Every structure is written in C-alpha cells, then in structure tokens.
Image 1 (cartoon, each protein chain N blue to C red):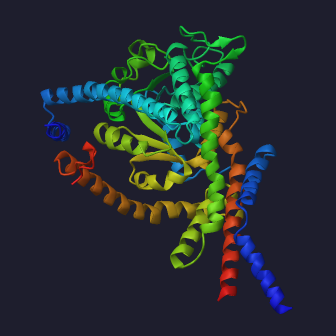
Image 2 (image 1 turned 90 degrees about the vertical axis):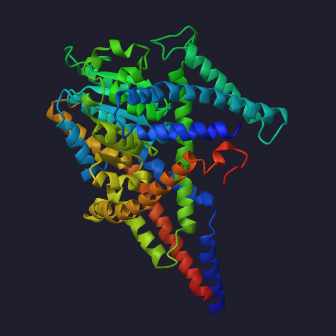
Image 3 (image 1 turned 180 degrees about the vertical axis):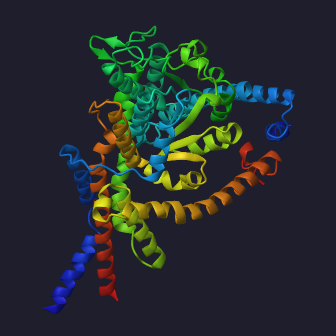
Length: 302
Length: 223
C-alpha cells in the first residue's frame, strides 16, 4: 500500500515536471487576456528614474525643445509607444517645442501614429492659436536618416542639413520651428526610446561631443543595462518598461490636471499594469511549482 | 592588390577618423564633415542597393531550386516590391496623396494603413510570443540547484514583483528593494562587464585598422 502511494506520488511529481507546455501557454494567455477584458486599475507609484526625467522636462526653460528619437519598431511598441505618447503630452502641456526623428525606419509609422493621436487630443480642446499644436510651429517630425553616426554628429551642427526635408516632404529650413531649433544647443533634452543599445550611441556621440542632456525609455528586459549610465548622470532620467510608461502617464495626468486639462485620456501603460501584474505572478507561481516538483522528485530518487 | 587596397583604405580612414577628434584644425574638420555627411551616406546608399540585390538574389535562388520553404520567398519578394512602390509613389496618407492611387472605393492601402494594419500586428505578435516561451522556460529550467541559482531565483522574484504595482501592495518596501538591486549590485557588475566589452571593442578595432584582423575581407582570411 505504502509502495503504491509512493509510486503514485512519484508519478504525480514527475508528471508535473513534464507537463505539456500547452497548459502553461493556456494559463499565460488567460492571465494576460482576462485583466484586459475585465480591467482592474492599479496605479503605479513613480520610481526615482521616472521622476527625474519628468522633473527635468517639466522645469526645462520654455525656449528649449524636447527631442525624441524613436529607436524602436512595432515589435516593442506595446511597451514603448505609451512612453512616446506620454512624453508628447507632457511637452505640449508645458508648451515646449518638440523635434522628433527615427533611427529605426519602422519607427516612422509609430511616430506618425503618436503625433496624430496627441495633436488631435490637444487640438480638440484648443480655442486659440496658442492652444493649438501645429506641425512646423510647435513640433517637427524630421523623419529617418542614416547612417546613425552621421545623423547624431550632424545634428550637433545643423539639423536642417541632416534632414533637408521633414517626414511630410516640407523643407526643414522653411519650417518656422527651425528658427528656434537649429542644433543641440536648442534642445533641452533628447530622449531616446529604444529597444536596443541606441541610447548608448547618443551618449557616445551626442553627449560626449556636444554636451546634450539625455534621457531614455527602454524595455524592461534591457533596463538593467542602462543603470550605470543613469547613476553616473549621463542619463537625466529613465523610463523602464511598461511600468515606467505607466508611472510617467500618472505624472503627466497630474501635471495636466494642474493646467485644468482634465480630459480623461487613454493611458495604455496604466491599463496594461493589471495584465502585467497577473502575468508576473503567474510566472512566479510556475517557478515555485516547478521547484517543488524538482525537489520532490530528487528526494524520492535519493 | 585585391587585398592590399582595402587594407590601405581601412588604415587611412581609421587613422583619419581617430585624429579628427584630437586636432581641431579647420581644414581637417571640414574634411571630416565631408566624410561623415557625404561619403558615409553615399556608402550607405550603395549598401541599400547591395542589400536589396542580395535579398532578391537569395530568394530567387530559393524559388528556382525549390529549397525548403520556398513559397515564402514569393511573399518576401511581393511585399518588398508592393511596399516600396506604395511607399515611394503612393504618398504618406489620404491627406497627402502621391502620384499613385491608394484607394479602391472605401479600401485604402496607403503606406501608413499598411504599416498600422500589417507590420504593427505582425511585429507585436512575434514579440508577444516571448511571454509564452519565457513562462514555459521558467517552469522547466529555473531551478534552485545550488547557492548561485538560489540567489538568482531570489533576485528574479524581487525584480518581477518590484516591476509591477502589485509588488507594493504585497510588501510595501519591495519596489525600493528592487530598485536598489538594479542601482547597486547590478550596476557594479554591469560596469565591470562594460569595461571588459569596451576594451575588447577597442582592441578589435585597432586590429582591424592595423590590418592584423582580416576576417572582414571574406574568404576566412582572419589571422
């Protein structure tokens, strides 16, 4: 009887260790999908790297522009696109000019999507010309150019020379914003939103040679790689993964509320926090179950 | 000469690229600007032609020889041609049309529509598969076999919980502790690794410029 029980238990732990991966996929799918279908909002509390970036942009002089480099493609847009949207909202809410470029060619469409969304949000509530967000006056979308070394170094001398025409085909030199946005000297901070090591290229070439202040928005898995540069002060702030995006959304929402801009805008980073929390908990549960099964099997064998 | 000429070019451009950082003479800086802004761009443009040529050659060869998964090569070639033609001649969106019609009745196929409705979901789908593979791999491979693995496991737990707002609800100081792990032990290790990597990059670059490392010439000529 005891032997049978022992055999039965051993089989159970072994079976548990060799569980069909499709069951794991099913659980992951459920924990990701259910919170999206039945959302429960969890507001994140901003961490110091996010707060630093927010404070820097918020207190930046009005005549200094925010430059955003879209260094990611559609594969990581779920994590990084909310950062771009939040940064644009912040810049327009604080009346900073924005210059945007893409180092990754597939980032162009994402930049265009974000600009359309945010300009529509602001222009829907605008009553005067000053309230409106206008292409060529309040922002410029310079587009994409290559190779990166040429672009990064060239922008320190003359942006219009690196991007002779903007994304929409207009001559950059003829845009009203270009009078105030000629090179890095007119940029208060450049934020590289990236799924790769592009922020380091900005440090190596733009910051080292021209002294431009930098921030970065990166995927959660690569956040660990950028901490040395954050703590050394080379990055003035950092948004790490979807949580970083959600934190920034919260800060921007509070800032806009101070301006009486309570528009109840969609915050995709914050919306996804419930799903991400559930997925992380599920993975932790998987690891615990896997380890219990592993030790139970090992003890039986010994 | 076939090998010597590229080696001489690399030696000269490598030395030139390095010395322009240290000598602020006007003539040298002008030449450096021309190299960066004009010469590099022309080389990159040739690279684009070479890339498209290689891609087409590779896939036509696959189709001709009916190699493994050859029907997918048709998809690659068709999407390359269609997106290039629409991108160049079709305009950016309906408000800024190009010379090519990008509407059939209510159906729009300008480049932003193609991008938003095809490339974005395809890219997002590929990346989101990671969540499934990571969960499966974590279940099967993440074992506390020894002290090092246990420490790794503990750090992973703290960071995973610290990376979501739920972590604060479970244990209030958890996000701060996760932040400390990233900002102190992680940073110390990363700095050490980065020093090693940068020294390695510098040594490799020097070997290429001086012609000691010749693997880039092709034909397995590395010394």
